[in-house]
Image (cartoon, rainbow, N blue to C red; front, top):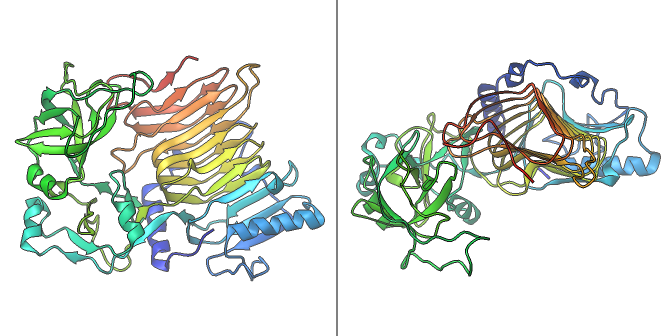
Length: 505
């Protein structure tokens, strides 16, 4: 499932976790009834160990640890088949380090524990364990930008600060070429070059609303489009850009806009087809068109143009030249760890029961339903973990009964939590829960983030939520309990919505 990154990566990511997260869980001060981490899954009678320098041919002892969680899982299976679970269950101890996440740990019914003999996967006490799904970028080859033609493409403020490197890895080129690509530096999310750096620019005039098509509403097939024959809206913007958008787009023909082009409650992203005489034309159709009919001018962000790389923490990838440009947060050197988010889910629990995952961090994934997914089963627990830096959902608790998340930090995510289960026809509750967690965005300026609660009879209690661009919680179904949560600084981009939004049906 994983192999080690270098030691510098471990040290730098640990520092990033300490710097950004600190002791976030201490901020959520309301007491959680009944459950405390000290009472969870203690006293396991059997133990296995996993370490960066381990081998899967080892015995899995403290002195001869395994290399992967998958091998430890198989050892637990073998123990159950040979002897059954001992009193107190089994603990798989994970030793300190940053593990390369390239395969999802699959746990199903045969990997279950029991109430008195749970199966626990957890970091060793006091040690930092990180599962990292990023594809590493070689930092030793970065050089200052000196070519006159390239310097001319940069914003004047960036000249002398931006570095560049050629990417040889074809898979990394593919990953960086997406308009929604994400990278991190020493565990800290960086930003694709954008205008403006904070907030939005505004539509001055809508010259053409563009083709309109809504899936499920508009009859017929979607209209076709291409760079040669675009069909999207055309508009100008109020604010003056930092660089020459038209010249840069002619060179690369790749950029995008995201924002509120029609209504305050509808955020959308579209590719750009052309920039001419200060006007932007979108490539494809949109749901409502570019309207600009509200009292407040419609607003948007322009992304992925080199001339807008103008502050520390921003980056840009020139696909044709296979060249990555970035303005590092700090000086870049051979101890810096740079990675493109690309990994899969850390774990999928499908029908498992009485499994606990504790005290680990998972980051930099870009595939799968979530960083950690629980489907069905019962009495599974995620406790004291950190989930961050992913375009996917942090934790998915879907179906089953009494599955929960306690005392976790979740930030810089496309979505934070899915909490669902129960039978709506019979109003049978699932009893799945999330208690005493901290959910926020730290570096992200574009990931929406949210908590979705659905089904029947689930609990969301004593959680701290803040810094969400839209409404952080949406609720559907019946008989849920949401209480004693602290919510602030949310919905600051949308003109519609609230801290909690309840959908009918």
